[in-house]
Structures are given as C-alpha cells and as structure tokens.
Length: 549
Image (cartoon, rainbow, N blue to C red):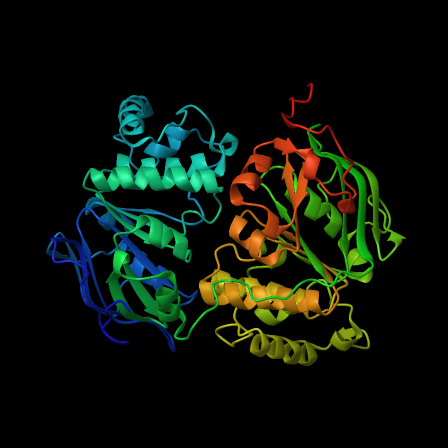
C-alpha cells in the first residue's frame, strides 16, 4: 500500500522545488470545518491530483488558493515565497489560473472577447483585441488549443469552451493551473484531448492541480495525488506507487466496490414500449429520427452516445417536458397504456401519475430549485401528495419529516434539511434528487447522467439504489456519457447517434471499441437483436449518410 501519514498532515511526494506549498490551512463556515490544518506540497512542472468525497473540502482549499476565500489560519507559499492572496486578481498576478467546473464565459461574446475580458490594456478595445489575437494564435499552436477566435461561445462545443477557459488563464500568464472536475461534461474523446493538452503544459514547465473524482483519470494523467477526507489531508503519494482500490479506500475510509455488484436480470413484462418516436425542435432540427425500443420490468437499459445526439430530447419527451414548439410523432406505452406526447395529459405531472420517475441530466437546472430549502426540494413534483397536505394547506412538518428520513437513508450530508439546495455539494444535490424519485417506487425510472460530478463513495451508493430498484421488478432507462457506467449497470445497451439508435448490445458481449464505433455512426446491423423493437438492416458495416437538408 502507498505510504501515508495517517489522518493529519501529509508526506511530500517529491523533494522537487515547490510551485505551491500550503501550511496548516484551516477554514470554517460557522460550525462546519471545511479545511483543518491542511499541508500540501506541489512540485513545479507536475500534474498533481486532489481527490476526495463531495464535501471533503477540495473546492474550498482551491478557492483559498485562488482568493475566493480567506483562510482562518495557515500560510500560502508560491515558488517558495509567502503570499497573502486577498482576491482572484492577487492570485492571477501570482501566476495562478483556475478553470471552473461550470465555465465563467459570456455566451454571446466571441472567444477573443472572452479572452480579454477583465484583462484589457486600456479603454480602447481594438489594441487589446489585436494583441490577444496574436497571443491566442501562438498559444493555440503551442498547446494544441485550436479554437476560432471569432466564434461566439454559445456556438462552441463544451470541449472547445473548456479550451477557451484554459486559454484565458494562459493569456494572463498563468504558470499554475487549477482545474475543477474538468471532464465532467466532456466526451471520452474530448477528455483524451484535454489530457494531451495538460501533458504538453506540464512538459513546458507549467504546474497543474487536477480536482477530480474519477480514479481512472488520476491514474492516467497525474504524477502525484493527495487525498482529502472530511476537511483533512489524509495522504499524499506518487501515483505510480498506488492503485485505484487504495485511493478509493483512502477517500471513503472503507473498502469501496469499484464495479457494480449485481446478479443477472430477470426481465418480466414490457413496462416501456417506444415506437417510431420522432421529434423536430422549434428550429426545425430533427432530434429524434424514428426511435424504437422496449424496457421490461426488472431490467436496466442503458443509452450510450456522445452528448448532443438526441438523448436529452428523449429523456425530456418521456419525462413530459419537451421543448415548447417541438413537433412530435410516434407512440409511447407505459404498462400497456399509450400516453399522450403532446397537449392535454402530456406534462410531467401526468407522467408521475403514470408511474414514471425522472432524475434529469442537469440537477441544478431541472432537478432542484437552488435557492429553496432541501426539504422543499424533496416535495417538488409531488406536492399534491395527501401525505404532504392538511386540508387546503401544505403540511410543512410532514414534508420536513419525510425529508429528514430521506436524508438519513440516502446519507445526504450535511443532514440539515433547512439549508438551501445550492449549499450542498454536487454529489449530495444528486442524492436529494435520486432519493425523491426512487422512494416514490416508480414503475419506470428515467435517469440521466446519474453520477456526473459525483465522488466515488456516492457513485457506489447511487448505483446500488438503481440496481435495487431493478431487482424490485422496476424498469430503468439509463442515459450516461460514461461508458464504464453504461457497461457495468446496464442489462442491455442501445447506442444513439444523430437521433437514431444505431444498434443494441449485451454488456458482456461487446467492448468500448465497438460501442465507440456505434457512437461515431458506424453500424453493424447484423448482430442487432429484434427484442428492442429495432428493425433489421442490411448485413454489413456501413457509415450512415448525412440526411439531406
């Protein structure tokens, strides 16, 4: 096992000159001790991973380093020199840049405008833009950060938006880059490209701190890794001298199953039957192109695919809230009963009445009202439940009691249901949504990106709850961009590309390479089973042609 120093302090992973040194950093928010006597040493020219459960204090520590928070005690050294970082401008002048999980970009500005925003050379923008264009071209060539400087942010993919964030930091001459969950919204290919960029930056002498919950990424890209648990630094090791299992145990304080433990599915009667489902969005773009599949009681069907290929529209339509103005056709049956897709009876409330639970892809936008208390969020969508009402008034005491029970059973931290949803970490926000939907015991659970931005302990917990629902005879439609998650959770896998289902596979009879080809639009219809309602096609491998405009 890798060497650690117990629950207090940390043994430096290298004696190389330190780009960053933190000494006894502590920070509390009222009664919550977010950081306690943190020591951290990050050598120059390395990629240093920081891992820990949601709420372990990682983001607080990095926010101190970037000047968002002032520590209650402790010392920060940059390149061996003590420094007091009072705000983000002080951090930037010290050569520190930060790329946040949720990008800080102005969507209707161009790349170039976003690059210079806050770093203008004077009142006249033209010289600043001209200078930035030249620097941007140089940086793009040096670090494989190619992006059109005149493109508006809203027209860029998520992966390219992240490149803009990195370019912003480099334009401000950052030598130290902090990346917070950088691959949470990236496809596997985009993540691989990001890693090549980070390796290039390291090779040029930059120092990178990578905050992530994905142990595969830690093992693949980092030189050293530090582990936090409940506000303390519990270990710091060389990545080559540890294993994912050891790191998971350090993070959680117990052994963690990295693979989903589940028996074989026992499929029953069809719960969800989808036939020839089509959707054209208000802009005239065909998002769903004749989707057909079934899900039976007691099975999990995973939808794999690169984000943006119709999975979101499929979940929204089945969940009862497609984009207003969309044109929809096809049939959907739940428990043998056809449900309306448009007009009266097609809303989310009716879906819940039909036994459909829904954990949406974006918990903060579609799953929670961030400024409302957690106990209020527990009741959203189910506020007409007789248990929550007393005559004409809502029974707040009953809702609070129900919320407290869900917090206990789903291990939501902190246990305070009076806190606003925004005050919980991403993983605990997800647990609130999952608890609300699963405990309604739906016949069909729609669940999108169930563990996006969630730590290893919470991932294990959420996966167990999904499998338990399946084993109770319920049907689950799982949408995830994480192929490992799709392969380990699903009983059957359907792959979407450009609004179509390209094929279906059994997890034990396929590979990530084969699924990757299907995700790229290359289909082998010879092995597509008929059980999903997917019509057979020609017996050869082909690249599907583009649809005519």
